[in-house]
Image 1 (cartoon, rainbow, N blue to C red):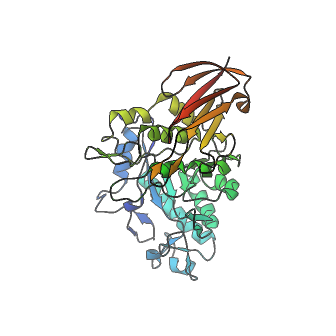
Image 2: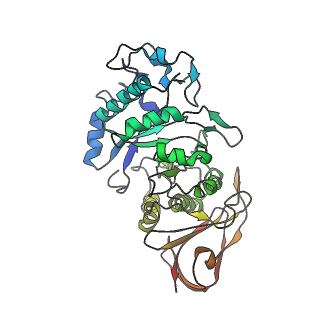
Length: 390
């Protein structure tokens, strides 16, 4: 990992790392997968300057009710007498009747155990208001009271908190206080038996970013970032690419847009299996600088990728550099659409009429342009430009 993707920081375990609890009702690692626990794993990762992350759900585990809060004689079942759902996965956890000092003691004991494990990142799934899908949204219960207690417990140890999924942007100010990152849409996985995702599932992620770009809380100044889900570019199994993307146009757009909005950037692939071509794309120096700026891009015109196929997004970095991404988002569920000419008016990014342009991916100097720039892009194709005052 260190050799293949040297700039990546966390290695995260998804839900399968835990299938039971300890005597105090806390999330513990599976003995069949981690016979020596997670501490040796985090210690090994630390040698490569990596940090360990895990997954959990808010609320009190349904299999933990007969357990006592560590250091007390209080049974966890006494905290959840109403048996209300505790997250967006029904039957997995219960919502505490009261979010009092006893509930916080339980969460604090989980945080303490995670610190013993050497965990630096926690993904909290099934958070609400949120969840569901674009067709049936808001299926998760309101977990904000739980998140506030978890926030207090994890922040004490500087543990990154990621919340998921389809988080409501109306509450962006609260989310920015409670967490470091938020999954703002449905899973990117297509749950196919042969491929991981699709071009359409990538391009449809552009649309929800518009409302988040208007919140003014996303970015490095607040330490809070959107999460568009895993970057599956080039995912290879047994020598075969299974990412499900139509072509390298889409793969480049995938990385470009995640970088433009400074989304949490998590690959879903084994880097040892990724072909060099895709490793080079994921490690592209200037694209990583755009991403690491921590500034979220904004759309020019409508950011709805379905209604407006000619997407234009831009951002100004703290050092003054201006980047623009032109995207042809014309796609359908099972196929790409048509080519379109996409244009940028330089006045829309605060520039005078004449500018110099550079193609970020190729490094090509595109010369001097007066007032605007246009390019014909294939469906799913994009062009990321560095805009330089002439």
